[in-house]
Length: 250
Image (spheres, rainbow, N blue to C red):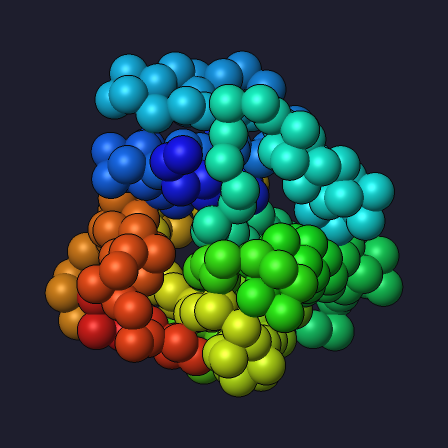
């Protein structure tokens, strides 16, 4: 059986690029998405075009029942092997705002999707991968953000805080399951040209802020995907608990 990777937020941006590159590298892929079924189906087609089995599954990662169903659906898929990699990529960002403008609802939603979601997915993955549970090992890659160390003042302090939690989760979980065959790492993108900026109300943000990046340009989704896929590979077999910045030097 080929290796199986679950990619949350797999229908667009970094997630979509990661799905396709995993497929190129010999993985079968589960494209988990919350609402964009057409985009997810297109990613499935792109993965299939390079010879991978691919499956789109709708799931809101911040909802426990959805996460349980996501993993159960993969378990029940007759053509798939066991899950060998989880890419915790799904995340949201709010409109540009100061802390003194934030609502409790926005804060709750930010943490539900960006923090609770990765924890719930990691829980299900560990139950399948861990040698303690009879698994064969595996890899978890969390998609964090350079915002965790920059703070995003005047824009997204809540988002930055949620990604700071992902840094801590990565380090703690990596140590917790290191003797159970599971590696856990985090890729921290900088300013990347994806539609997350438009969803936060600033469609031109990546290009506008290019000047603050030492390399003087925003990154591309494929550049983040390359780092994620490397961490999933045997070439990274001695890497766990790492926070890998892919941020153009920022």
